[in-house]
Length: 246
Image (cartoon, rainbow, N blue to C red):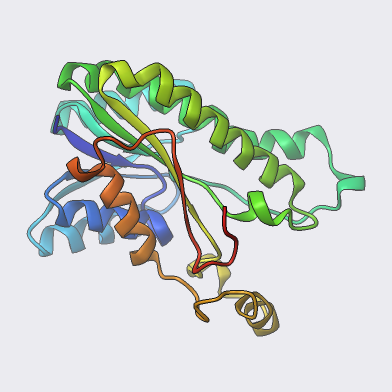
């Protein structure tokens, strides 16, 4: 198994760091983005400057036709996808359960159930041609924390875990492992406007006494993408400094 790595939502935040980390491990990286071309090109430039190989690919990974086109373009440039990291996400509003609509649920499911499913199906023939592959989903420890207002997001993340375990059983005979990396709160660009009091309240419950970094999440993704993880599948690894413990 080798091929390339495809990281969705990789123009910034966790996705950008995961792309850079996989490139350092020798993967040719497809940096997927939707609205942020300049940011995606900056990620590619940083990878190339460090001696790696990468290219930016624009696609809406919640759209079936776009996903097919994305994977076809990636395979034309780099060959089959050996590592898939479905990282793309959307807005995650806090909505009281009494006001929650079915559309609110669908808005989360489209990123954490529909998109990963479309991506898995699109890369599967290529992974089988390689004799195996790695699918590493990006989850969240909110599934355990049951934070008020986050019912739709948490439910979708729970569904993501179920997908991972089922796929691990179904795809294992093809040499494909499927796992979830579940970060705690890892501050990135989109958290810039949050009040400091929220940061302090969160840290009070973290045994290691600090926030994690995107690089620490990327390290775990890189491990699961590597040969060192070859006998690990259907698992969920939480990266949150002990904030919640399975």
